Image (cartoon, helix red, strand yellow):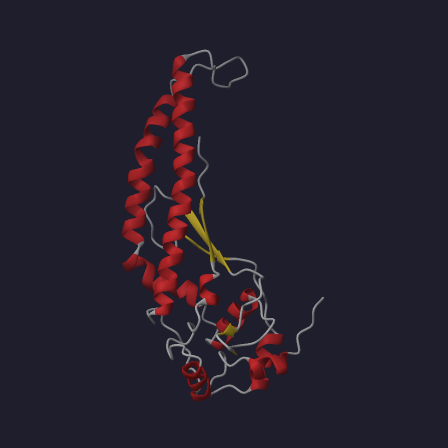
Length: 235
């Protein structure tokens, strides 16, 4: 297993250097991290409509974060996006800023549009499917009898619905990811975090924006993976 020299790593992590943290303190945070594969929010936590029972998973990949900027470098070498996320949470007072987006920003920015989209695109199809399912002729084994036209109609409708499910999951995930990137880039997500003056000077030297704290090159947040999943079984 690869072993990090955390103190040396912390010394080189110019994007994490805060006025209130020493290199040793950051190294201590890094050594004691519990790296989660995935984190999630549910439709219930988002006070979502009952007809769209879903879970949103989010995680950062194990790929190495690119730290070259023009002819210079910004941040640690050899740091994975996933480990960087956990370090940022720790230095942000333990506050998962992506979770904060879903609690504070998603409800006013996207929730209504996502609710409407899911309802309008799938609700009518599901109603028709359930109506047909009650009238399906069954074989002796208790499965829909494919000799009848109503069964063929049901299967055709279910295929259409399943395609819509797949498309809707991709579209919602894509929309949420772009909104998270936009919110972090524009300082909309609330952070408990301030960059040191040295880091701000380093950003200026490389032609990067001074604020917000967690968006310099954008490489980190753009690597986030959003997975939208329906929880309810479908017929």
